[in-house]
Length: 195
Image 1 (cartoon, rainbow, N blue to C red):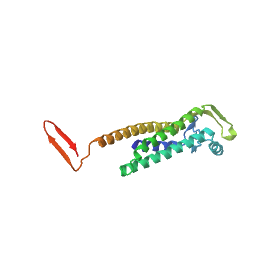
Image 2: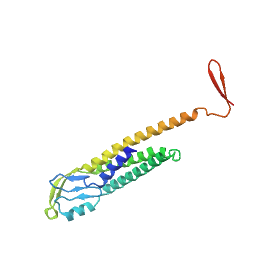
Image 3: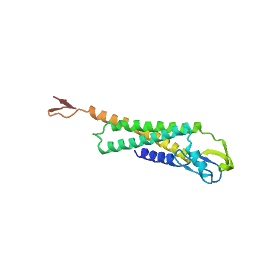
Image 4: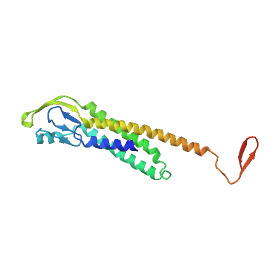
């Protein structure tokens, strides 16, 4: 649950920081999925550029938001399972599945962004702010990858914990239960019979 909380923190930071791509010029603009920083660039043109989202950027935004929502559900299910483990038995199964969905959404988000992203030289005329330079992937993209890696670890640990819990509860359930009439016969070995 701690890994999911940390992954959620990285997801939120990656989502709202303005550096999914950065122009490698001094004080160049940084463009994020949600926010942006214009630097010394023409503010109006920068806002227009930020306002125009390409279809792949919209898809990345949607998958990042879905990952964030599933991380929140995962944390909620984890808290319910901690508060009352017997009452919320099915929460233990939902935790690794929710974490798996989060991992898949984060994977799709950063793979789509990386595959569609182009590090081309961008030329914007001087009357629109004048910028000439290459775009590079920024730190927000890296934070999304860190969130994905943490989510992979959380999912793996969740499935391991679920299988161990299932094995442990199955092992306990196979032991004979005590009844009101227990006869013990003592010879060279102890034999327990139930009636």
